[in-house]
Each structure stands twice: as structure tokens, then as C-alpha cells.
Length: 85
Image (cartoon, rainbow, N blue to C red):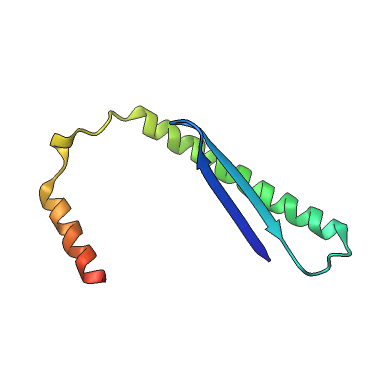
């Protein structure tokens, strides 16, 4: 099976999410295609609830300020990235 997820922002708080699920087996049985679509759609709806809660969490926070960024932490991240190369 092949799966496609194409996500593109619309506004600061909305996104277009296109998805497709393809299969190349038992294509002569439409009920199977319908079942696959229903299962993927159900999983997406479960994810959508979590995504909505994440947006609420983001909206409830004050925007980060540059002054609050820890340069020690940033330096540690740079060193960590260097070791992964």
C-alpha cells in the first residue's frame, strides 16, 4: 500500500491536509477499498482531535522572546548536531 500526506498552511492557524491511500491488491473488491478509506479516515479524525488540543496549547502561551533564549542550551544543541554528522 502507498500513503500520501500533503500538508500546506493556509493561515497562521489553519492548514490544508490532503491524504490518499492506494493499494494494488484485491482491486476487484470495492468493499475492501471502502474499508481502507474508512479506517484511514477514522485514524485521521483521532489525530485531528489531538492537533486541535495542540493548537489550543500553543494559543495559550505567550510568544517567546529573544531574551529568554538560553545561549548555553543553544550551544549544546550545536555541539550535539556536530556529533551526528
